[in-house]
Length: 98
Image (cartoon, rainbow, N blue to C red):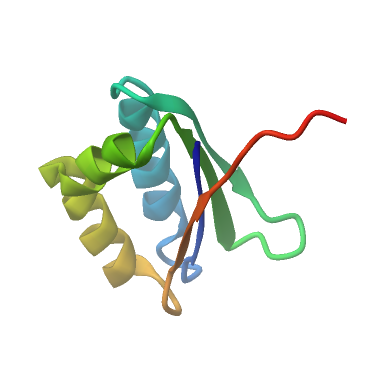
């Protein structure tokens, strides 16, 4: 399984647009093959920061996702609206039952 975390901190004048674009991106991503889950949350300690959490079936699925024109357009748009550089981390994970 592939786990992706990311965040964007918007400027006060761009938060509504960042939120709108993020919700569209999450909704679209959920329909892609290999997407196990994809969500966005608002940081309770910083209301201008949105945090993404994604799970993908495998490396091929996330590579397809990142290669889509819609994903690239989203990343470019968000970067222009952000107050600081966005974060993105990709992990290979194995589920552990305890």
